[in-house]
Amino acid sequence: MKSRLRRCILLLIFPLLLAGSAIAQSDPAWTEPFPPFQIAGNLYYIGSKGLASYLITTSQGNILINSDMEANVPLLQASIEKLGFKFSDTKILLISHAHFDHDGGSAKIKQLTGAKYMVMDADVPVVESGGKADFQYGSDPTLLYPPTKVDGVLHDGDEVKLGGTVLVAHLTPGHTKGCTTWTMKVTDAGKIYNVVIVGSPNVNPGYKLINNAAYPGIAQDYERMFRVLNSLPCDIFLGAHGSYFGLEEKYPLLKKGIANPFIDPDGYKKYVAQTQQEFRTELAKQQAAAK
Ligand SMILES: [Zn+2]
Figure 1 (cartoon, rainbow, N blue to C red):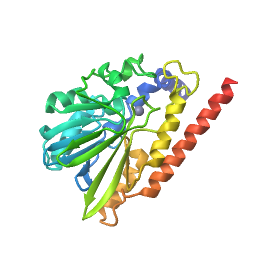
Figure 2: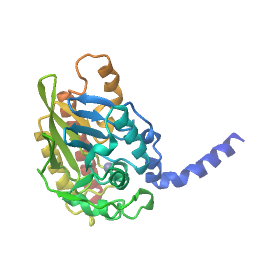
Figure 3: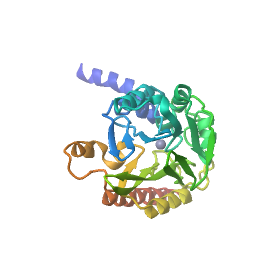
């Protein structure tokens, strides 16, 4: 009886295992609310437990980074309002990279707020095709999302300015062709801090780092991305998922009122070194297998 039940469960789960995406899409942490909070200065966390989003407030309106999935939009709005800000004051919408878990809600946010959507050049075709132009996931219908018109095309090093705040778009490609790491300076209690919001250094399961016809320069792009990440001055370490920078571990420490746990230059260096090592290990494995 027991084994028959297990077989039943396996039969149910097996199709999900085949489409790794379906599992990823149903990661419950992605839609689990997380308390919104002030990270430092005019920079706030408004994401869910698993998907990181940021609000940067200015006298001219606000900048939102990462629309997450379409299902997350009401959570983002609630987080912004809980902090005492207006969702309708969202003037500019940015993303970490063109994957459905970071840009799937963009059409909805544009429609609700009228925000100007600014995207790194190489991610624009993916965003505007609702994911169909993605080199890895374009033909997987479970990972598509509403195609969204981009209002401003960004290039490496471009500055996005609003109300005295300047965000710099660093092209950190590999994970997507236009993957973007955002930097800015925040002033908190009279001190200025360098903020880095990492786009994604991860090599996803199934990514071909060599002989990839859909993305011939992928390995060189990953190398370039790590050069950029290694060169950025970082005090406040953030990223597209809370797991990159230890959101769940750091948040309770912030509440205790001790030194701001998100000021973590060593954690940033460690993270970049570790993910770079993971990339190189995977590349070596694929090179060996191709021989
Ligand atoms: Zn991604």
